[in-house]
Image 1 (tube, rainbow, N blue to C red):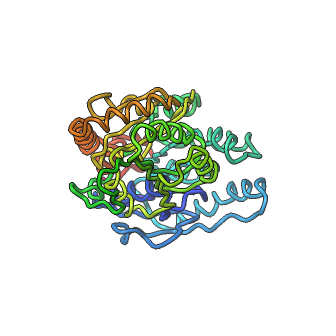
Image 2 (cartoon, rainbow, N blue to C red):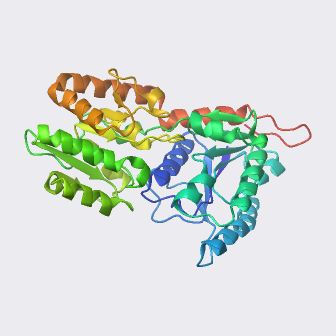
Image 3 (cartoon, rainbow, N blue to C red):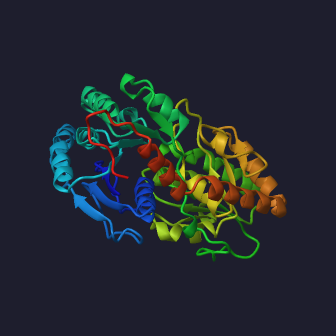
Length: 395
């Protein structure tokens, strides 16, 4: 089977270190592992092809011209012509799979015209996200692209129930939205992996992995660590990642006298993450309150795959993934004292902490691997109905 994977978002370097980049790499790797011939279309590769993706042919679509935001948006819309031409020149595909981006519609329209299944993966309500966090000039244009691409796709894949509800507000998406959560690659998290940043004997290490952005609950994390460290001085905070909130977060820790108790690795390659998780005793995901929490957090799946006890907010998909007291602990969003109390319980009872971590690992390896994600996607593609008179799939 020949599969075209499209990621037209310039903000997603497909071979980079960002969470969205890892998501692309793992889905492509899983497709390739099923014996598919995968060809990847993207304006931004950034770096060498990661292990396991050496046989994936990459079509680089080129960057976007224009210095100001309005010009970039118009250039992104114009890039649909290049994408359509690249798909047509690459030969016939059996399926087209695209990661939804703000200005791209050519992939799904190509699939519909070619009479092959077009599957659109939607990870976030991008119009609202762009407008709130990065700025959006042509909101009406972005809405028009969304309506166009949602209507063109045969199947829409939402990474969470919250994203599904968002998509179902669009009439063109009605009845075609399926939820497939994110996953993990078990090969990255072998049992008894050595810690790459081991703590001094007797130190209790709390860990956080992710981009340092406002919606990750860094203020709650700082306060919870301060409360916990006051009770358990022989503790440290290991932060894996970087982002725009780093300086503010450092200032918060400094004001609380915690600078020496915190370690920042900065941005790291995906291959380094498992060893860093093996250096932690607990994985933290203290998301703040949110009316529209739509994430399917990769870090939580990876914490669990690494066998860590997880303390996360009771919000969105996390409330379904984690069963409190069985495979992790949940706290009210933004409640730092509750997070600190949960950490104290885990510190006191190492045997219970170990059981939670092992149950967490069993949960994700049994139900949430990237291979399972890919099989669910392919099953949806196989069940896609192509209109009569249009060429069908050759499975």
